[in-house]
Image (cartoon, rainbow, N blue to C red; front, side, top):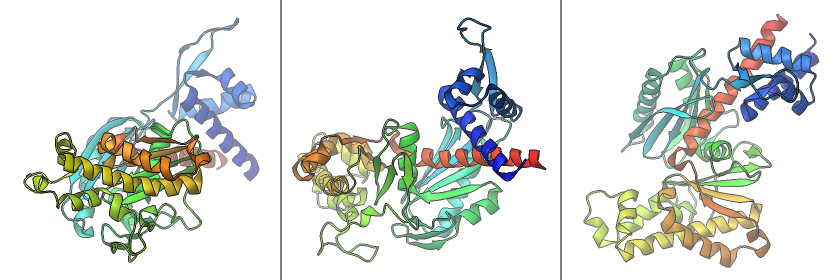
Length: 396
């Protein structure tokens, strides 16, 4: 088989598998018709997928006049992926099947994010998930990690994570050495955008922007159904968009950055000026949301944070003209307290043409957007590399 023939076969096999994933249960004949491939080609590729235990046959489907067709299913339990959301004060790990369904999870809150301590906790979370892995043909097939910082385009190094205080961290190599599994590292907002696109609020939109509003703010772009990373992989650092030229100093070295006014950290910092809040033992976002039900001063604080969120979102809308804005990460917990003030700013300041078709919503996946996006990276890497590996075996 020539290289071109091998490449065509790999692409066709990938298309067949994706059709089964998207439309199962489906027959070989329907795949052939849907993709415009011959029945013989489809049958050969499906037989390989069945042999690899990636797909399986189920009972006959409805007949359109002839023999009832055998239906095909995607074997979502052929293996499992791990997704890690490395937050600024927490580490959330999930194990999913190959369709993104969570089968186990592990959450650890952190007081210190020094790298030496954090890497131990990341390994602890991963090991805990590995210990809970169900039986399957392939076991755990990879690990995806979303990090709050700038990752090089090869996905090997964390170049800068200002809110963690990290510079030039080789996380991928350390985790791969420890667990002997493929590891994919990406910015957490990119992973969150991808999670919402695959499994959440963004499923029906081709151009969406995910705003990850946690201790800091990051932004992930899905443009024409593809994740946009920029020329060097550094896109999305809009938490450091300047909204006050003479404003507060930021850890990034600039002043007046958006995340200083519209993040969870901004909320917590401003809450220190509220006397009723300081009397509470649990000084966190959840307690503030609870207090806002009865305390007008706390409710007004959420209104201020919402307005500042709206200023950045307004700039994003006027720049990118997206179909959808999804607000995720920790501040999504307070969506009822934030939405009205966000919309008030957008309606007042966005260009009318941009307002007409944009949908502003909160993440469907709640706190799981990034972890699920990261696990999806690992799953797709496995499925694509598995197809390539098996073609290489046949070639040899």
